[in-house]
Length: 285
Image (cartoon, rainbow, N blue to C red; front, side, top):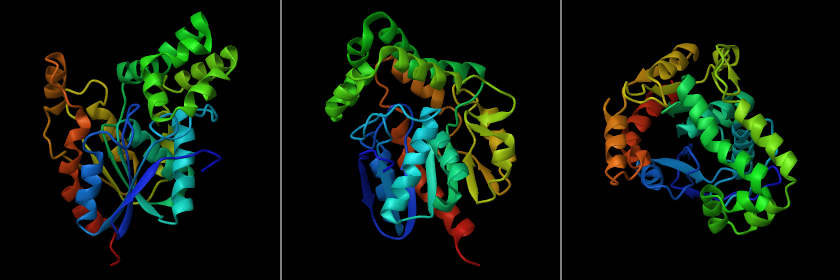
């Protein structure tokens, strides 16, 4: 898709969906497949996939932003599969990719479902540095071999060994310029609801949308960001998440104790809510 090899699975039959996790997580992340299977059991067909630079999919440094690259790839995947238009759903970075896919490729989206939407000055800047900062420093100080040895890239190489050669063949100066451009996309702006999507573009998205309100304790996915996006999307419903308000604080406490399994294990709780919403918002008549 878009000249890239993409890892994906298609689960079930029925109304088409695609689920996208966040961070550098791939389709093996705990909770993702379980959510897809729970949706499939209710009469839906669900695609789970590895975005470029995650899992089994190819490494790529094309595109003005990484999220834009991933959105274009998702649209190409849905067209390749012939399963769209689909309900495009995701959490954290996956919510950003979902929004951008619907905005840039409206023919591929029948609806949107979003949760854990990254926002706020601290949230956006810290996420940008997390995605790009270590790679910039490693390339500057040790070249591309040092980049390939970073834990985040080593994990990708373990799933897709061809990624190592793709990294090593990059010119360090060009790679640094790309990472800095991708990092700059996370600079907060009053004109952008999420990186790469303006308020004006969001208001043109008239398809049905379900936005889950972020918890008050979540510093990376701010409550006001979810509320602002729900207000901007013309046909959006703002809903409380099925896991309650304290889930982010609980996760941080578990991480401190070494017991955190990750946020995505909660994804199966979404399946009945997502299915019921889609039945009401997307069914004819």
